[in-house]
Image (cartoon, rainbow, N blue to C red; front, side, top):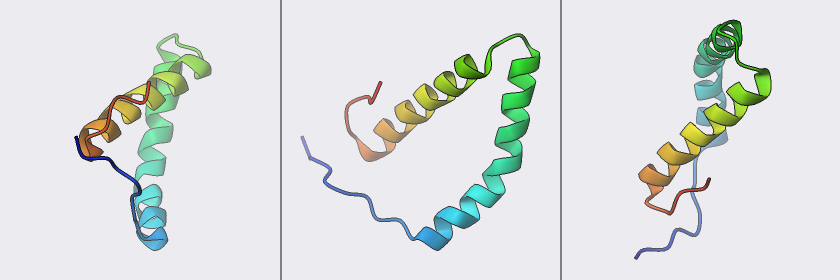
Length: 64
């Protein structure tokens, strides 16, 4: 198994990506809350989904 020690991503690109993702993410959070879930449930679920995707991309065990 290959061990991951670090990930290098340019801060400017992360900022640009956040600018693009931010509005859609806020819409997703708002729509999911409107469906009857609490903000905590929504944020934890999003966190778990992101962790699963990140683990797949960097080939490490699941984070959650």
